[in-house]
Amino acid sequence: MPAKPPAKKTAPKAKPAQAAASAAKPRAGKPAGKAPTKPTAGARAGTAKTGPAASPKDRARAQEVFAILAARYPAPAPALDYTDAWSLLVATVLAAQCTDARVNTVTPEFFRRWPSIDSLAKADVLEIEGVVRSTGFFHNKAKNLKAAATRIMEVYGGEVPRTMAELVTLGGVARKTANIVLGSAFGINEGIAVDTHVTRLSFRLGFTESRDAVIIERELMPLFERSQWADINHFLVYFGREVCDARKPKCDACPLAHLCPRKGLK
Ligand code: SF4
Image (cartoon, rainbow, N blue to C red; front, top):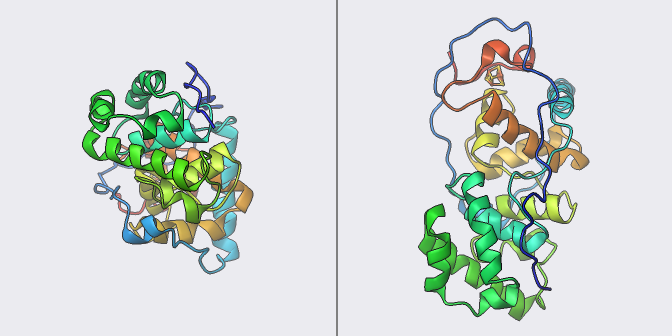
């Protein structure tokens, strides 16, 4: 099915519903280290399974975190502009190691040149590289997107597949991208997308001891209802950008401070 060019603003951006405020004591933040962003073999293969049941105490704390963030961000959605599953998949692949804002400046021209999956499958990879160059890693991104389009045309009848097992066979698509496409484009909560923000916040909040995306996803899933899986990704991404920054987390003005062990921070 032809993909329409993304509209100027197709996905509602979440706006803070309330200012950061809490009775938390001021505490100096310290970088917790750079989180890994490259998908592991497990992430690529789509092997995450729900972990063991969470303790009632951990689950209650996670639910309290969710409720606070849900009140703060009433309209969770990807910050990437998209109109359908294909344009979201393309934007998410381009967003690897790149800002969403930058990707949103590139995708209008991308979909002007290649308005359908079929047209991208037939495109010159050098031309694709030229358009996506500013997002970084453009050789791989161009090659992967062309390969993904080709496979969708040849194997999936021109439609973006709707299962994790099929999505991770597409070029450049690992569990994170597949989870985003399934959750936000199809409304299917298959897992939790784990990116650099989710990795960092899950660790600081004490939801996991791991930095591995597949393990983190497996440990987060029992803490939240399946219906919450797409939203918790958005919430942690927004909150990571706004409050729990990688280098300077605003712990003294954090509404989660009473729930957070601040792991990795002093
Ligand atoms: S969630 Fe809040 S209290 Fe916890 S580390 Fe991040 S900013 Fe600090």
